[in-house]
Image (cartoon, rainbow, N blue to C red; front, side, top):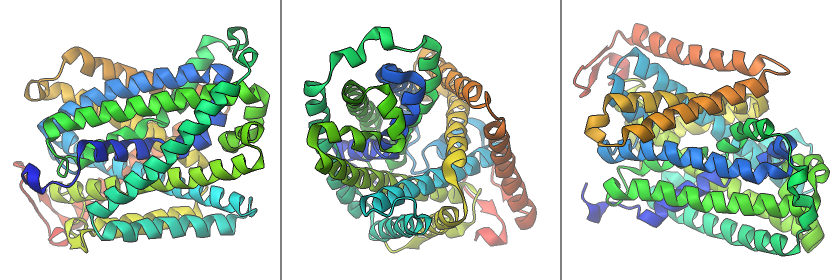
Length: 438
């Protein structure tokens, strides 16, 4: 595919990346991160953005050398070969992506229900969640151009309103509420890094645009760095504006609706409504980006032989993996409580990042990346995982157990598919044998 036929420009890719990051993360996690890092949470956002940028460098170099819709799935295969290990890791990434998708839909449903004074109603939350994921599935059925157009509109509206809110909040803030004397200990800021990093995790979705983006060798890394920079500046400004107007106790009390609650002192009751509406735009934007990535991941896995060929076949202007992704997400939305599972999804993606960086070291001569920065990305990602586990197991080991369970399930699925189909993976990565996969 030459540049003239590709459909995603640099700034459209930036829009996809920013849209994936500024979703449920900033709206749902500000209170959680603030409960740990207090009014120093803006420092955590800056550090998390730096870790994301370092990790983004490694993924961008891989994306430039191996431009494929599957992103990380393709990189793992190139580094470790088409085998049980790469298959298990790929399935784990796909499952973690679907978990994130279902969580985002739940977040949208919660905001929609609260906006209509239906807060606390699980029925309405699920109805709204199922509605948005179905609607965006239909949007993507009509092709990548529809994805880009929706993403660009949603991101522009979201950023515009959040920038106005951040600037107004900074102008009206009370400096005494941000006094360094009120900062918690440095270890608490580091513990919160595990949560704030999740707010940046969506940048990896830019690598899934590799087959559609113009000049992937240059634009993937540009899009990753630009989108992370935009998001980091916005997160930092918002966190200072929120804590500078509300104080620690009120932010923690507001929890999931911290941004909307912080708008009340500045804009009054209408501020709560406006920010809540922005939350709907932001979460729908994230759903759109993650759904696009999940479809491409399943497509790449089908090409590599880790999923049935069904996933790679076309439907409308997309692939049939979209249908499966929407249906599985719908099941999770209806039957599961996603709060703890979301944490498992986060640590699973961090683990996959680490595996990808490790694999990058095996092919670094081909990518011509800096070994120093790839090793730094590996160590930084592992450090975030350790911090996450230290913080989460203080009260319970359930997150650790669920993570191990998801890892085991991923490899069990890979082994079962191999046993059922008796397929043999082509060492050249050109194809596979097995009736179900044809």
